[in-house]
Image 1 (cartoon, rainbow, N blue to C red):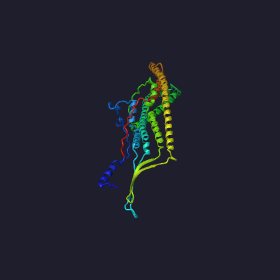
Image 2 (cartoon, helix red, strand yellow):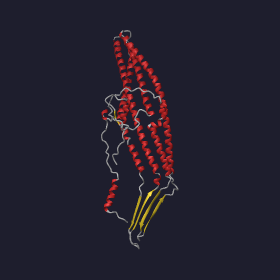
Image 3 (spheres, rainbow, N blue to C red):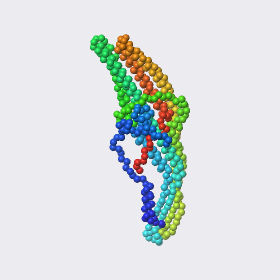
Image 4 (tube, rainbow, N blue to C red):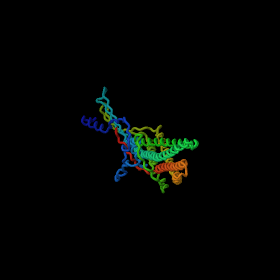
Length: 456
């Protein structure tokens, strides 16, 4: 039997070691990593092509609702943590693309006695052939799964952006409502002070003061609720952006939105545009390849190779070897049934998601049309109430009406403005939901880079 010289064996050993992974520690953080302000966040959007320059969001001016969503995607801690899914999918692809290792068997038997003249040697080399049959299907399934994970991560980015945009919208209109409620409370407090003086001078009765006190208590409760809701929204938005809970910044006036004229064609293009539908399609394709691999897996375990040996009388022999299972009991029935059931489940999930998306789009269209009509009516009523309040103020200056009547007119005008704000907020929320359901308004490629491998 040929021997390997010590220098050659050292080289072989070194080459084997060089192809092995090595361990590197990855210590956990001991301190939180929350930014104190927008200046500590990532604000540069990667370009979608080499010809485009990266876009940097200007944090020196009030942020638009859409820019808040994009900053959330760039900095959300949960999005960063989910990038590991891509690493796992790529690792699965690497594993699926590897061919099975051949098997080597070596044997040695020392001569202890008898008519023999030398020690016996045996060696064999074999390769699993059955795994090669399913190699193509398994590799294709892994490739498709990588695309599925990538599309699913893009959809998660969109969901984070949607949540951040909704929170920013609620904060903007919430702060407008707070300002109106404070103004209303100031009017009531001023009126109560004057009535209390009139009651003390016996010019009015306590019954004139009671409804004003009740109105003030209601206004104070409404203001407290608005302040608490806005605080919660700020804290939730800060968490999405990776900011400390008390960080604040200016939000720009939400831009008006018009329903696209070609809505039906947009609905028809949902399967190619919405990342979650793309992910489900790729998941279905991966499952279909799994079915193919399971069917090919009916091929029994089969190993083909050769052997060489020398017995104690120095008689040498060599020849082929074949090892295979007899498919009597296990013909991969379980894996085939499981793969087919998974494929059928994904088929129905995709159809249900597509139906739901189309239905949600049409439902939101109807809601936005109704809200737009209500908003137009509310704006007219608010303008009329504001004009009446201005007339009342002039009449009060001339002594034609009392303070109580003027306060009623001004309070009514503020309530009308509050109704407009409430409808503006609802319409803005529907607009954000509408664009997400249609797969519009956000980058069609992921804007968070995949986490690099840091340890092996």
